[in-house]
Image (cartoon, rainbow, N blue to C red; front, side, top):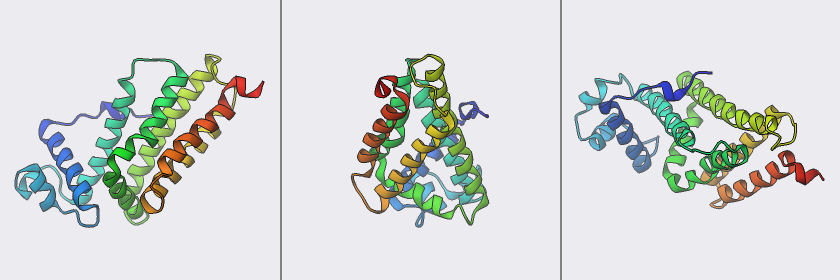
Length: 200
């Protein structure tokens, strides 16, 4: 499994990623243009095109960037306690997005293009695979340490990702409280499936 933290972003590329972030929040995917990204970047469209031939190329790199930020936030946590690390992972997936609702909308718009854009589809799949890998690794670590019950880690991981995906979509389309509800539901599921005392 390739580690996204091995990707490196030069200073100009980092600035373009931040500009893309702001442009997506301000305009959404549908109204995003290289010109608007360049305006946020404070340079010409040619300066952006120097690094990325097309908007789609830039957005694929942006998805890489988001995953790197996510993984970096998890890696920076000093605790090795599996229960705490699982809580932090779920917070990153279900609490932090509440602070970036406009970006969540833009990402959902990009997901809606995945059936038609192979590069988007591949990148979303790779990112999803890596997040599932992180969740499963924490669960397996907890099982090995005797903190969690000996369960099917793959099944639990897929169930948690279903909660996450459903909540993020519902939060954008239908329900302002979906993320908070899903975070509570994820905790209840973890308690029921993983915590030994819940089975006594």
